[in-house]
Amino acid sequence: MGDMKIDVLKFESYDRTKDYLDSVFSDGFVPIITKPTRYTRSSPTLFANIYTNNITSSTISEIIIMEVADHFGTFHSTRNNS
Image 1 (spheres, rainbow, N blue to C red):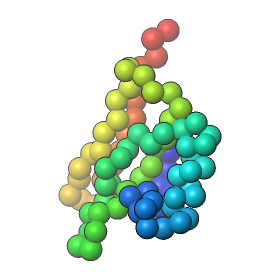
Image 2: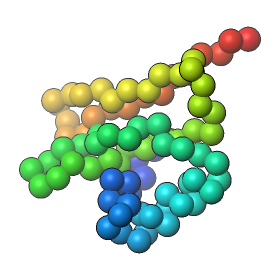
Image 3: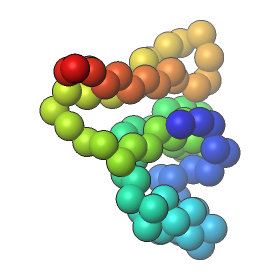
Image 4: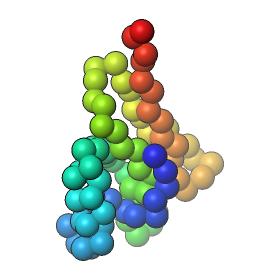
């Protein structure tokens, strides 16, 4: 997880973004956050990325919309059933 400074919403228009995502997918990871995490006057972006290789029904991920910053918060929670 992190703020990778790569707008994954631009995967169709930027080869470097497509290459980055291809690398993530080839390592067996999928994105958890898939909607924009920042809105500006010019366009929405998705810089706050969270990836996982463990998709189960006991997880939750959300975008926290805040008006105090130009970036929204994100989180991912996994329940441990042991």
